[in-house]
Length: 477
Image 1 (cartoon, rainbow, N blue to C red):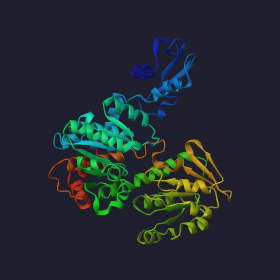
Image 2 (image 1 turned 90 degrees about the vertical axis):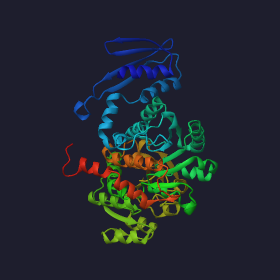
Image 3 (image 1 turned 180 degrees about the vertical axis):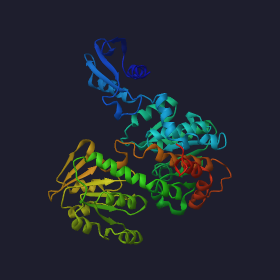
């Protein structure tokens, strides 16, 4: 089955001729003279991989008659193979709350809306999309915005969605995507519903396409950064918002997992660095920042904290962290090896560069590249170099090398799956509970934020009971 999937993928981008099996694998003739060899084998260290794992190797043996772009297209096609039935069954097993949600909610509970999904393109997202379809939404009524992060499996996720018939747009074309979505939804007689992770859609409607706002029934927002992006409109938001972002459920269940993923990915990217005993600076002591500070301290780092809100700064001080109201002073005196941005805003700007006197790493933990004013910092540098997967390095006049890990984008998504699927299961299921609520005409939510109502729904819908049954003291997994 794996071989057939590869052959099908290559045939979509190249003129495929004879396919022959010999002693070392399949030999695929491409065009008149070129050929590639396909090998499907077990991992070199089977015990280090999940049972049933295969390694696919595609070798361009002879490229005569092919351009470089054609060779790259053939290789890229293999990276875009949709997930197999076996893989999807494994993913559903990791996410029973989301995968089984259609059995617990009323049949067809999303059939009255056309969702726009702007959620990270990781493997857990595929289980979420399957659930949306099972709740009564036809695939051609779904639009997905690809946030463009370099996730571990992003190409395969996109290919899987395309095979299902789901429309995928890049997030940079959000205005056109929303226009296209409302056009398709109108032919089905359905209003749109926004399900967002990071404030990608409603701000676009408010700024660029207010004419489309009446065609949407509401917004489900997953992240605080998405809520923050709506601040300029204050009480002028015309749609009801179901705020999973501000819910007690999300605050209780997710924050430590994100903090742990941030540090684990940092260790993976910096295998030669010794963190123990080194200074670190956490900018932003909110839900994520306080957990990151604790994880770093548990690794025996000397942690300092800055937050613009005095109540949070006092909270950090009371927990024994070094604190300060001035970022530049902390940079100069504490001399952190690692600076973590956890504010959801821009916490480090060009004006702070002069206070950095040692080699260090800038690490973002929130949406996109907002944590650091990358352009301003680059303007302060004498030279900027590309460090590959690690990110971008700024060579400062002081001699310090400042590395923007992941180019300033969130490290927990950088060529990784971030949270284990068992962690994200509850949150993605919560998003769908929220969506089914706003799809109900008499939902009782008003225009703007509905934090209290969101908490009531999430804490009474049965998700927490199912989660506790699965992971509580009587768990029988």
